[in-house]
Image 1 (spheres, rainbow, N blue to C red):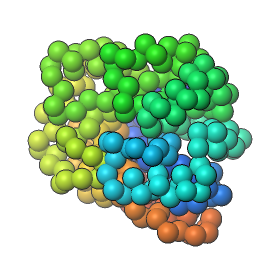
Image 2: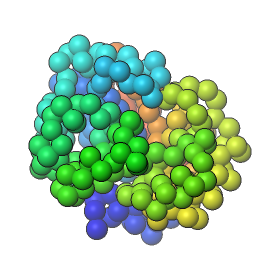
Image 3: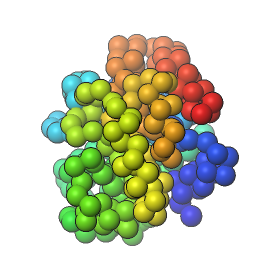
Length: 266
Protein backbone atom coordinates (compact mmCIF):
# COMPACT_ATOMS: atom_id res chain seq x y z
CA UNK A 1 0.00 0.00 0.00
CA UNK A 2 1.37 3.41 -0.98
CA UNK A 3 1.85 6.30 1.41
CA UNK A 4 -1.12 8.10 -0.19
CA UNK A 5 -3.32 5.01 0.13
CA UNK A 6 -2.32 4.56 3.78
CA UNK A 7 -3.15 8.17 4.56
CA UNK A 8 -6.62 8.01 3.02
CA UNK A 9 -7.30 4.67 4.69
CA UNK A 10 -6.42 6.25 8.04
CA UNK A 11 -8.66 9.25 7.32
CA UNK A 12 -11.57 6.98 6.44
CA UNK A 13 -11.10 4.91 9.56
CA UNK A 14 -11.03 8.06 11.68
CA UNK A 15 -14.02 9.57 9.88
CA UNK A 16 -12.02 12.65 8.91
CA UNK A 17 -11.87 14.70 5.72
CA UNK A 18 -8.44 15.12 4.22
CA UNK A 19 -6.79 18.52 3.90
CA UNK A 20 -4.48 18.99 0.92
CA UNK A 21 -2.77 22.39 0.78
CA UNK A 22 -1.06 23.45 -2.45
CA UNK A 23 2.01 25.67 -2.38
CA UNK A 24 4.37 26.66 -5.15
CA UNK A 25 7.80 25.24 -4.41
CA UNK A 26 10.26 28.03 -3.71
CA UNK A 27 7.66 30.71 -3.06
CA UNK A 28 7.68 32.97 -1.15
CA UNK A 29 11.34 32.08 -0.55
CA UNK A 30 13.44 29.09 -1.66
CA UNK A 31 15.43 29.06 1.58
CA UNK A 32 12.25 28.49 3.58
CA UNK A 33 10.65 25.85 1.37
CA UNK A 34 11.18 22.98 3.81
CA UNK A 35 10.15 25.09 6.80
CA UNK A 36 6.89 25.79 4.98
CA UNK A 37 6.27 22.11 4.27
CA UNK A 38 6.69 21.19 7.94
CA UNK A 39 4.45 24.09 8.99
CA UNK A 40 1.70 22.80 6.69
CA UNK A 41 1.85 19.41 8.38
CA UNK A 42 1.86 20.98 11.84
CA UNK A 43 -1.29 22.89 10.84
CA UNK A 44 -3.09 19.72 9.82
CA UNK A 45 -2.17 18.92 6.22
CA UNK A 46 -2.75 15.29 5.30
CA UNK A 47 -1.11 15.45 1.87
CA UNK A 48 1.11 18.22 0.50
CA UNK A 49 0.65 19.25 -3.10
CA UNK A 50 3.88 20.87 -4.19
CA UNK A 51 3.74 22.94 -7.35
CA UNK A 52 6.74 22.75 -9.65
CA UNK A 53 7.30 26.26 -11.05
CA UNK A 54 6.68 26.42 -14.78
CA UNK A 55 6.86 29.29 -17.24
CA UNK A 56 3.55 28.51 -18.99
CA UNK A 57 1.13 27.34 -16.27
CA UNK A 58 -1.99 27.17 -18.45
CA UNK A 59 -4.33 25.83 -15.75
CA UNK A 60 -3.28 28.29 -13.08
CA UNK A 61 -4.77 31.67 -12.26
CA UNK A 62 -2.85 34.89 -11.67
CA UNK A 63 -1.95 34.14 -8.04
CA UNK A 64 -0.16 30.87 -8.81
CA UNK A 65 1.20 32.20 -12.09
CA UNK A 66 2.91 35.02 -10.20
CA UNK A 67 4.20 32.58 -7.57
CA UNK A 68 5.75 30.48 -10.35
CA UNK A 69 7.31 33.59 -11.88
CA UNK A 70 8.80 34.61 -8.53
CA UNK A 71 10.22 31.13 -7.92
CA UNK A 72 11.66 30.82 -11.43
CA UNK A 73 13.25 34.26 -11.07
CA UNK A 74 15.01 32.94 -7.97
CA UNK A 75 16.37 29.97 -9.92
CA UNK A 76 13.97 27.30 -8.68
CA UNK A 77 13.76 24.24 -10.89
CA UNK A 78 12.91 20.58 -10.66
CA UNK A 79 16.24 19.62 -9.10
CA UNK A 80 15.73 22.06 -6.22
CA UNK A 81 12.18 20.83 -5.67
CA UNK A 82 13.33 17.22 -5.39
CA UNK A 83 16.08 18.31 -3.02
CA UNK A 84 13.53 19.96 -0.72
CA UNK A 85 11.37 16.84 -0.70
CA UNK A 86 14.42 14.78 0.26
CA UNK A 87 15.25 17.22 3.08
CA UNK A 88 11.61 17.16 4.27
CA UNK A 89 11.73 13.37 4.43
CA UNK A 90 14.55 13.53 6.99
CA UNK A 91 11.95 14.59 9.58
CA UNK A 92 8.70 13.37 8.06
CA UNK A 93 8.39 9.85 6.66
CA UNK A 94 4.59 9.75 6.72
CA UNK A 95 3.05 12.76 4.94
CA UNK A 96 2.46 12.05 1.24
CA UNK A 97 3.93 14.49 -1.29
CA UNK A 98 2.35 15.03 -4.70
CA UNK A 99 4.18 17.13 -7.28
CA UNK A 100 1.81 19.19 -9.40
CA UNK A 101 2.96 20.71 -12.63
CA UNK A 102 3.36 20.20 -16.33
CA UNK A 103 4.86 17.58 -18.57
CA UNK A 104 7.61 19.67 -20.14
CA UNK A 105 10.03 19.83 -17.16
CA UNK A 106 9.68 16.07 -16.62
CA UNK A 107 10.25 15.35 -20.31
CA UNK A 108 13.34 17.55 -20.39
CA UNK A 109 14.66 15.96 -17.19
CA UNK A 110 14.03 12.50 -18.68
CA UNK A 111 11.19 10.24 -17.61
CA UNK A 112 13.41 7.49 -16.24
CA UNK A 113 15.78 9.88 -14.49
CA UNK A 114 12.89 11.86 -13.00
CA UNK A 115 11.17 8.69 -11.79
CA UNK A 116 14.30 7.41 -10.06
CA UNK A 117 15.19 10.75 -8.47
CA UNK A 118 11.63 11.56 -7.39
CA UNK A 119 11.16 8.15 -5.78
CA UNK A 120 14.52 8.40 -4.04
CA UNK A 121 13.62 11.88 -2.74
CA UNK A 122 10.34 10.64 -1.26
CA UNK A 123 7.76 11.84 -3.80
CA UNK A 124 4.59 9.76 -3.81
CA UNK A 125 2.58 10.98 -6.78
CA UNK A 126 2.50 13.38 -9.70
CA UNK A 127 -0.31 15.46 -11.11
CA UNK A 128 0.64 16.61 -14.59
CA UNK A 129 -2.04 18.94 -15.84
CA UNK A 130 -1.25 18.53 -19.53
CA UNK A 131 -0.84 14.76 -19.53
CA UNK A 132 -4.32 13.31 -20.05
CA UNK A 133 -5.11 9.68 -19.52
CA UNK A 134 -4.86 8.99 -23.25
CA UNK A 135 -1.21 10.06 -23.27
CA UNK A 136 -0.17 8.68 -19.91
CA UNK A 137 1.76 5.78 -21.44
CA UNK A 138 4.77 8.12 -21.42
CA UNK A 139 4.59 8.03 -17.62
CA UNK A 140 5.15 4.27 -17.41
CA UNK A 141 8.67 4.77 -15.99
CA UNK A 142 7.06 6.74 -13.14
CA UNK A 143 4.56 3.96 -12.44
CA UNK A 144 7.36 1.39 -12.62
CA UNK A 145 9.16 3.37 -9.91
CA UNK A 146 6.07 3.35 -7.69
CA UNK A 147 4.85 6.90 -8.30
CA UNK A 148 1.09 7.32 -8.60
CA UNK A 149 -0.46 9.52 -11.30
CA UNK A 150 -3.16 11.74 -9.87
CA UNK A 151 -5.84 12.29 -12.51
CA UNK A 152 -8.08 15.32 -12.97
CA UNK A 153 -11.81 15.34 -13.64
CA UNK A 154 -13.96 18.40 -14.29
CA UNK A 155 -17.62 19.41 -14.59
CA UNK A 156 -17.19 19.22 -18.36
CA UNK A 157 -15.90 15.62 -18.31
CA UNK A 158 -18.17 13.45 -20.44
CA UNK A 159 -19.71 10.34 -18.82
CA UNK A 160 -17.68 7.86 -20.87
CA UNK A 161 -14.44 9.61 -20.05
CA UNK A 162 -15.41 9.92 -16.39
CA UNK A 163 -15.86 6.15 -16.29
CA UNK A 164 -12.34 5.75 -17.67
CA UNK A 165 -10.91 8.14 -15.08
CA UNK A 166 -12.73 6.40 -12.24
CA UNK A 167 -11.29 3.07 -13.36
CA UNK A 168 -7.74 4.32 -13.86
CA UNK A 169 -7.39 6.60 -10.83
CA UNK A 170 -4.51 6.04 -8.43
CA UNK A 171 -4.08 7.57 -4.98
CA UNK A 172 -7.02 9.94 -5.28
CA UNK A 173 -9.05 11.49 -8.07
CA UNK A 174 -8.84 15.28 -8.17
CA UNK A 175 -12.19 16.83 -9.08
CA UNK A 176 -11.94 20.39 -10.35
CA UNK A 177 -15.00 22.10 -8.93
CA UNK A 178 -15.57 24.36 -11.91
CA UNK A 179 -14.27 24.78 -15.45
CA UNK A 180 -11.58 27.44 -15.44
CA UNK A 181 -8.26 28.32 -13.88
CA UNK A 182 -7.18 27.97 -10.25
CA UNK A 183 -8.47 30.63 -7.91
CA UNK A 184 -11.13 31.93 -10.31
CA UNK A 185 -14.86 32.25 -9.93
CA UNK A 186 -17.11 31.62 -6.99
CA UNK A 187 -17.70 28.12 -5.73
CA UNK A 188 -21.26 26.82 -5.63
CA UNK A 189 -21.22 23.59 -3.67
CA UNK A 190 -24.81 22.83 -4.59
CA UNK A 191 -23.74 22.59 -8.22
CA UNK A 192 -21.06 20.00 -7.61
CA UNK A 193 -22.25 17.89 -4.68
CA UNK A 194 -24.38 15.57 -6.80
CA UNK A 195 -21.61 15.14 -9.37
CA UNK A 196 -19.03 14.30 -6.72
CA UNK A 197 -21.40 11.82 -5.07
CA UNK A 198 -21.80 10.05 -8.40
CA UNK A 199 -18.02 9.96 -8.94
CA UNK A 200 -17.38 8.61 -5.43
CA UNK A 201 -19.86 5.81 -6.08
CA UNK A 202 -17.85 4.70 -9.10
CA UNK A 203 -14.22 5.63 -8.41
CA UNK A 204 -11.89 3.08 -6.91
CA UNK A 205 -10.05 5.85 -5.08
CA UNK A 206 -11.03 8.72 -2.77
CA UNK A 207 -12.14 11.97 -4.44
CA UNK A 208 -10.53 15.30 -3.55
CA UNK A 209 -12.18 18.56 -4.59
CA UNK A 210 -10.25 21.73 -5.39
CA UNK A 211 -10.34 25.02 -7.31
CA UNK A 212 -12.31 27.81 -5.66
CA UNK A 213 -11.85 26.70 -2.03
CA UNK A 214 -10.85 29.85 -0.20
CA UNK A 215 -11.58 29.55 3.51
CA UNK A 216 -12.89 27.44 6.38
CA UNK A 217 -16.54 27.85 5.37
CA UNK A 218 -16.09 26.76 1.76
CA UNK A 219 -13.83 23.90 2.87
CA UNK A 220 -16.45 22.72 5.37
CA UNK A 221 -19.13 22.77 2.68
CA UNK A 222 -16.94 20.66 0.39
CA UNK A 223 -16.22 18.25 3.23
CA UNK A 224 -19.87 17.30 3.38
CA UNK A 225 -19.50 15.32 0.16
CA UNK A 226 -15.77 14.88 -0.61
CA UNK A 227 -12.99 12.74 0.83
CA UNK A 228 -10.52 15.62 0.82
CA UNK A 229 -10.34 19.34 0.17
CA UNK A 230 -7.57 20.98 -1.86
CA UNK A 231 -6.80 24.63 -1.18
CA UNK A 232 -4.17 26.49 -3.18
CA UNK A 233 -4.55 30.02 -4.51
CA UNK A 234 -5.83 31.53 -1.27
CA UNK A 235 -2.93 29.97 0.65
CA UNK A 236 -0.34 31.02 -1.92
CA UNK A 237 -1.74 34.55 -1.78
CA UNK A 238 -1.56 34.54 2.03
CA UNK A 239 2.09 33.46 1.93
CA UNK A 240 3.10 36.04 -0.66
CA UNK A 241 5.67 38.47 0.67
CA UNK A 242 6.55 36.54 3.82
CA UNK A 243 10.25 37.21 4.34
CA UNK A 244 11.45 35.13 7.26
CA UNK A 245 11.12 31.48 8.26
CA UNK A 246 9.05 32.51 11.26
CA UNK A 247 6.71 34.60 9.13
CA UNK A 248 6.32 31.86 6.51
CA UNK A 249 5.50 29.22 9.13
CA UNK A 250 3.21 31.52 11.10
CA UNK A 251 1.18 32.57 8.06
CA UNK A 252 0.81 28.93 6.96
CA UNK A 253 -0.35 27.79 10.40
CA UNK A 254 -2.71 30.73 10.88
CA UNK A 255 -4.29 30.14 7.47
CA UNK A 256 -4.70 26.38 7.69
CA UNK A 257 -5.59 25.96 11.36
CA UNK A 258 -9.20 27.26 11.12
CA UNK A 259 -9.72 25.16 8.00
CA UNK A 260 -8.48 22.04 9.78
CA UNK A 261 -10.74 22.87 12.72
CA UNK A 262 -13.75 23.34 10.42
CA UNK A 263 -13.10 20.03 8.68
CA UNK A 264 -12.78 18.19 11.96
CA UNK A 265 -16.03 19.75 13.21
CA UNK A 266 -17.82 18.49 10.13
